Length: 187
Image (tube, rainbow, N blue to C red; front, side, top):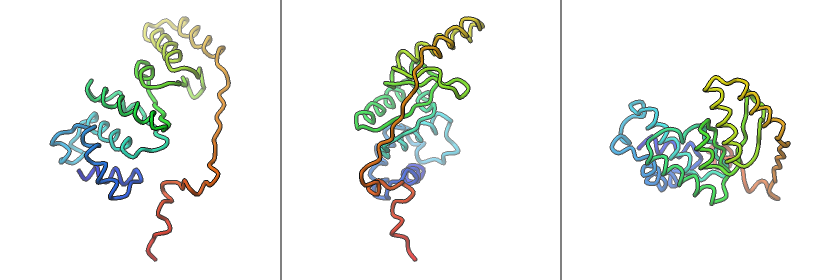
């Protein structure tokens, strides 16, 4: 329980918000009585489920998830996908880092395939994931010529990605999380 509370505080919640979010975090992570044990006793999957539940409880405007959906059983996968859909519906931006093409297809609307730091392809998630899957299959089956053909075709078809950051009229209305409450420090 202390991990839930501290994790929520670390995500920028107030103590009251952390207390309010705790039941939802516990429900999503489904750790059972293990929620009362030290985190060092958790399996890697249990830890990943708890971290995912805490991160998504904070309702961030931008969330980065690195392979977290790949852990856990089928039931957790369903719960985490439902949470991701809810977050997208609430107009948040979610960046999912994954090698699992099926997860990308099921979870994302847009995908960017990177290879050694270079953008191979950027487009609809189902198209990019399918091409990545074919390339990965060719690599796994020791068919380097096929893999080379697939990645070259993807490079040839890519278009430059334009990223535009819209700054609110009053940027002070959205201070960075680490700056929240800065004016309330005791002297």
